[in-house]
Length: 244
Image (cartoon, rainbow, N blue to C red; front, side, top):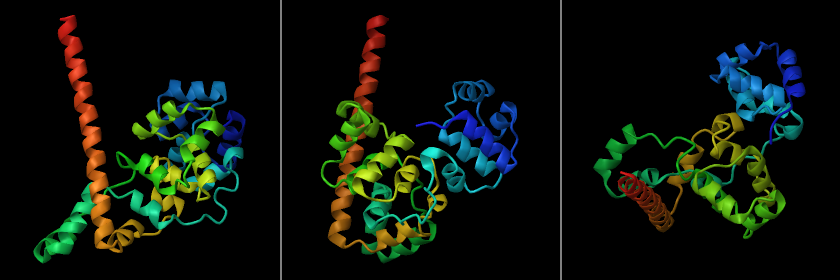
């Protein structure tokens, strides 16, 4: 999904923002050639609007809602579910919580210094999809988007999810469409109306057994990612040795 240049120009004028491609590029940190090409092709990416909004202290969610594909996005946004909040906890978050519950001295030290992992995190997209899955979300996303399930799986493995697919997933799962925009990194949690300390409170409210099970899942996921990275490095090294 992308935004039309016509709507983009109208939004810039209505918001009183600089209209030249050079100014847009400078305030968004993009190359001038990138902005020029997007405007010429009438395919403005959502992150340009979000970054430009932040640069001028505008509400990114309201800015997105100006555009036809996102109209109504800012109207009565639903808060994330507990499962969505928990999905955005990393193995580090869970491990610190576990240690804090079992060691009073560690609780004092960790509680005073540990900050919960930022969003997006390395496996956040797939964890979010798993958290909202009513049972058939991947096949439904594939059918409705026309993206092969193998390609969709590759996107999730690479922690990538376009705004269009984020909203599609949320529609299938009947959850707030803002969640996917947060976990994929387009919006910050506070910009999407996520409650302050929401993930921290969800973490503290986990039962001990649930905490242990989640930590076990996260560690297994971490192991898979590390193993895949090592295998990729080994393959690359073998190729270089062959070529050498």
